[in-house]
Each structure stands twice: as structure tokens, then as C-alpha cells.
Image (cartoon, rainbow, N blue to C red; front, top):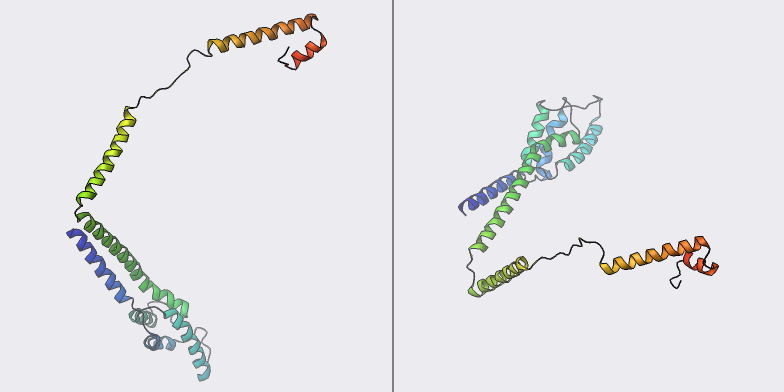
Length: 216
């Protein structure tokens, strides 16, 4: 019971830590963090007017807002720093997909730990519930019912074991009566064939024998 309690406490602690690290940032806080990315320069190095630059940044920000949705502020900040310092990327402003891949590489492992911690916590809670049920005293009337059911089941088992097992195996073939009937039929058929061959049976009788008429 002590071990189960420690396991439950540890699982709850790890679950709480992971949840705290994955609290999503609000866009009002996350958006300004992306500012340094747009000072890296465009990929095509084309000259843009201030209005065109503002429009492009607005479009990029809309994409980044979707990418950053549900992600924590610390991970967004670290991803921006990684691109600005050149640890990832190629020195240009990343698109939302590139930024999202690097961002999720930081948070997906924590989500995996969170899922595992939740699984352990649920298993520990179920174990504790089972232990609590097992420690509850059994009422005398309940114990009597259980013992009666076990005794009835054991009686059926004992009766099945004691019941003789018989199996009839015919080691001598057909019964004498069946053997006599078969031999008689065979002799009648052989005699009829002989008489047909010798021409001693009329045509109607021949037809009856060929057709297997039982009255002949």
C-alpha cells in the first residue's frame, strides 16, 4: 500500500509539472515575441515598400498565430531565439511551417511525458481503489453465500468426476441378424442373375429384378 501511494504521488507530481509547462500562451503575449524573426530578411531579398512590408508581415503573423495556438510562451521564445542565433534555419525569416516544426520539437516530448504520467496516475488510482475494496470486511451473510456457491460448484465437479464414462465399440462387425439378412439378399440376387442368364425368367420378371422391385 505504501508503494502504491508513492507511485500515485509521483505520477501526480509529474503530471502537474508537465501541465504547468504546457500552459498555452495568449496571442497578445506571444505575437510580440516574433518581432526579431522579421528582421532577418526575406528569402528572395526583394525590395519592398513600407506598405508592402507591413502587408507581408501581417499575413505572416496570421499564419504564425495559427502555428503558435496552444503552445506555451517559453517554447515560442526559445524557438525565436534559435532562429535568430542561427542554430536552426538558414538566416532568413522562417515560414510558419518551419517555425512550427521547431516549436513542436520542444513541446511534443513534454506532451508525451504528460500522457505517460496521466496513464500511471490512473493505474495507481485504480490500484488504490481495489486495495480499499479488498480491505473492507465481508459480512457474515455474504461470506455464507460465497461458501454455499463454492460448495455447490465443488459438488458438481466431484459428481462429474465420479460419473462412469462408457463407450460402446463394435469389435465384431454387424449383428448376427443383419449379417443373415445381407447374405440372404446377396444369394437371392445371385440366383436371379443366373436364371436371367439361362432364360428361365419371363420378361416382366427380368424387368422387375433390373429395376430392384422388392415384390419379385
